[in-house]
Length: 139
Image 1 (cartoon, one colour):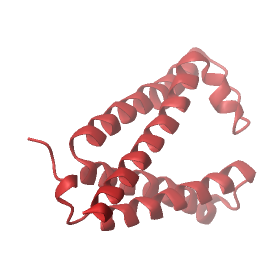
Image 2 (spheres, one colour):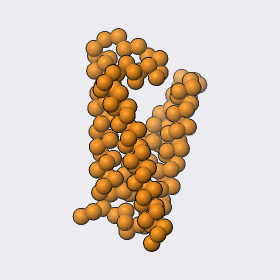
Image 3 (tube, helix red, strand yellow):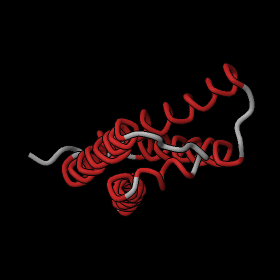
Image 4 (cartoon, helix red, strand yellow):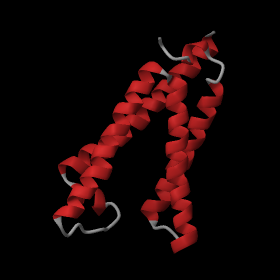
């Protein structure tokens, strides 16, 4: 029983960490979209560009944050499954870029490692929580 409880707490902590990391980028994008793009040395040159970054990183990021908090509170297994997809596809998108356009810079390489590690953590936690009664949805 203690192992099940520990697995669920680890899963909740991971979901929370993922949610907060997405929220931080979202807040940055709402406040100043250029700050987000400065991370990859891209200059926003018009209002449509600012709007797009606010929408994708700000609006979508906030939606992801809210969704993850909801899943953290109601269905840990679905939250982990969602994060497996999210972090896995983030990492995959960077790998596609490597094959299509060439090597990543320091920022991209660091995030490829981070997203791959998060993907692996999500898979392991999902596997550890697969049979957990505590991880079932709250009715």
